[in-house]
Image 1 (cartoon, one colour):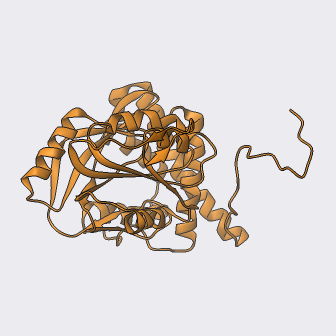
Image 2 (cartoon, one colour; image 1 turned 45 degrees about the horizontal axis):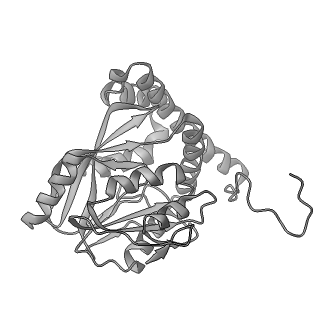
Image 3 (cartoon, one colour; image 1 turned 90 degrees about the horizontal axis):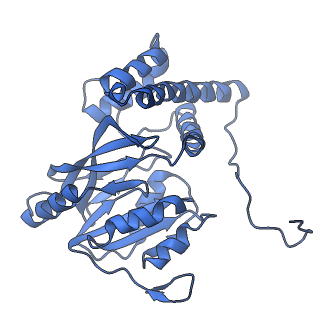
Length: 301
C-alpha cells in the first residue's frame, strides 16, 4: 500500500498474468503514465527501482500503486541484481521491462498462454525500435521473462545481460521500444551510454558475455565490440549494417538518420577511449540540469 502525491492510499490492482514486472528508472516521468497503463490489467505486480529521479517519475508510479524503492546507480548489472535479490516478489514469473517499452495485446496474450503451458523456464520476444515517432524495421530477439528466482544479470556497468538456466522459448508478438521522446533526449542518453562503454573498454572490463567469433550470436556481437577498432572502414560498415542489413532504409529519411547516428556513436565511443588513453583518467560523474536550491544561499527567481 502506498500513498500518492494527494495523500490517497493507492495499490496496484493485480492483473490476469502471474507476472511481476520490474523496471529501473532515472527521470522517466515522460514514460511512466503510458507504461503503467500498458501493464494495467495484465501484470500481477509492478516494481520500480528508481535512481533518485529529479522529475515526477516516483509521483506517477506511486499514484498507480507501484512498489517503489530507490537506490543510487552504480551500474546496470548491479541495479538489476539488486532488484532481483531485494524486492519482495511473490509472483511465480518475473519480467524485465524498461519504461520506454510497451507490450502489444498479441504479445500479452501469447505470454500468458505460454506461461499456462508450463513447459519452459524463460521466454524471449521480439522488440521493435521506434525512432522519431516512426517504427523501424529494426528488431531483435531478447530474453525478458523467467521463473522467479532463476535469473541473475551479468554484473557489468552497461549492456547487462540476463542469465537464465533451463529451456528458453520464443513467444510471438512484438514489444515496441520508444527509444526517446526527441533527439535532444536521445543524444543525452547516448552520451552517458558511450561513456560507460568507453570506460569498460579502457579498463578492459568483462563484457556481457565471452567474446567469441564462432560462438552464439550474442558472443559474436561481443567479439565485434571488443575488436571493432581494428576493422578498416568500420564506421562506414556500421552505417551500411544499420541502414541496409537492419532494414532501416524502409523508414525513409528517419531510418537514414538513425543509421548515421549509430555510426556516430561508435566513433564517439572510440574517441572517448582514446581520450582516456591520452589523459590517463576516466571521466568523473557529472550532474546535469538543476537540482533543489541550497538553503545556505540566497535564491533569485
